[in-house]
Length: 308
Image 1 (cartoon, one colour):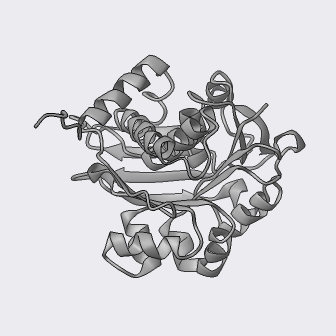
Image 2 (tube, rainbow, N blue to C red):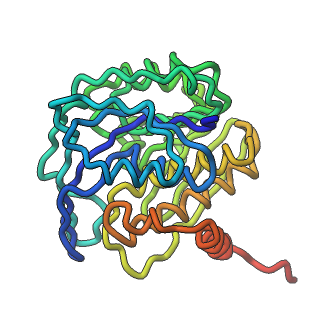
């Protein structure tokens, strides 16, 4: 049974960083998030590809137990593709091109067997389609939504609507600033909770993340201090995948504060692995042992021994 359903993009990326350049590699929010979550839980994905999408990319996901029966393939269609370049501190990418291809007119359809999945992650997507996907589900236990500045700019009303129907939102600092119209992240977190969300998670890149909740639990997590970042593409999606993956693995509820804290650290660990290589090159070969080891290292970053 698929325990975690993920909606997002499956794409082909061209990426250039100070550490190299790749073309046509496996990308898209669904790829990163599902690969990350697969180390914790049984995952199913909903997305769309053209017939130019390499079989090898499908095999990578299937080999990790990802159910791709919800992926629509459009004959004669072109897969979503994105090209970007990172320079300097690599905190943000300069988009060179975006070709929507079959993604432009995609209407997500959740397979009947997956409509009862108790955990759902709505990756960066048109909020109208995020809401349509959510309506197809049978009362998920936890629903998490990610978004981006594009939808805040052109689909703000649709985004506000879907935010009323999910439990948790994940935004980066820039998106939170834009959506909440404030530079103060504490204020932004409270404003997001004011929409009726149970939790709000604000990612701060190399400075970790913040979690606000209706239970009153407030959590600040550090980032893992990488010595080298080769490609940050997909790190946010990998974070979200690790987050929901852990929650699903322990059957967590929305108010299980300790498990949410653990989930944040697992998500942080998974995102750090992604940044160490291009595409899924460092994420796909992982073992649960390596993941748990990094999880423990991140926990130690803020640990103070109980001494007088």
